Image 1: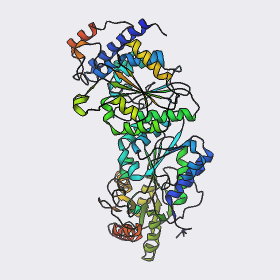
Image 2: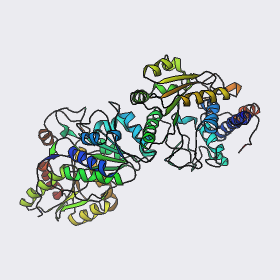
Image 3: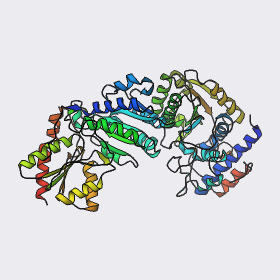
Image 4: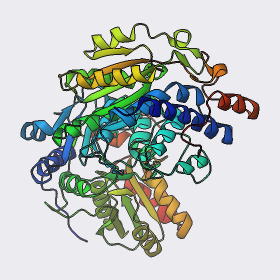
Length: 281
Length: 317
């Protein structure tokens, strides 16, 4: 395992990247991005088997698909810091002619992105397709997917969830970012989804929970546990309990920062709580 | 006049099935997905011969389109099969984001297009699908005219890199194009040369256009008939050249006149060579139950309607 202190430093740097990206253009989604910083850092630096460079086909490596594309700031930061493109390019987030569109896209050719996402509910289906192609290609690598919890209100997910279990898509790990918030409020108030673990189990998935989704070591351990459960005739689901806005005290435990950027003063406070580690872009 | 012979009525969906069977033998990257309509889409052969490359997704079209997009990652060429209605309107955003915007090499193959689906009625008779698909950037839109051409198109689109919408139908229609003929995406086919009116047709109305040209000949009107199997990218040059020659145009399609081939042709002509045009198409309406022939008659989608439109447009010159 990589030095955990280094990865924890990277998490803090990723938080800074998220905050600075959305602040600069006064738009974007910091809340969910901050909540998933540990997940992305763990996945890209400790869990996934990745080839050098980027090829769309991703033969012989693990692939990741982001279904809830609005948390692009954390995705872009972790991709850049994993070497897919220069970190300076984070300066172009959401600007005209940028490869870093508001929501991730393959359209501008940004390395690391394999599908457009933003319109919710489509990522699990795409991931299943990629997983089936891996099987056809006798490629033993895995597919990882992240989706939001509110996103599970989209019906297409349940078509996909049903398919994956019925067809033993066991090279797939879908993580649900369980932060309990969506734009209009808490998921329980907007459209309560009840017992998600029970739902995934009833559909035939192997379900595990990471209770401390913002504890890097717990996230790494949970992802590795999930990985060990692949190849067992069932798809694997991780319920990742996170706190939206994690790492910035005034952004935590509220949906207020789902899609709102901090002002100058708020950015200053937020960055003070997350001092520079690896180095700002 | 050139003479065209119907070698025996066949359904275009069987042409698709035959093309897919051929691809199964010749291209190991071709995979097929179907949403519980394997028999209707004539995908049984492919399924039987290549079970490992056939994916039954159940009645879940959105998931099918998303899966197809994902399957391209790693080099597969997915062909999805369901009715035109469920291939387009039901899954528009999945096609828009996961296929078209993501630039995925998915072939969306749609049977039972238009009113000639027949007795099932308007819930299943989509007349808006060409419009929906042609508006998506990067999408190729093909509507084939008979069994032979549908088979040829199915084989041809596997070689084309990029998303394709391939539209065909349920009923048995005249089969008159050459067996194992070539198929060039985006290239109009000149079927009948004429000097008084250009008939630009797509799908099985191409045959109706040929019948109409015979009737028009008897009336002393020389009709040029062009088969537009590819609505996007449209063969602008062929349409402009013919319009310059004849001075008036009739478009014919089994689709709403809003958003179909007719509007695409009108756009080309308005930009390059403004020309009187009449539209043989449904007039912004839903379909209904009936036999294909009854419906083509009621909705004005046959040779008789094309003759009438031709006479009208010649009078407008």
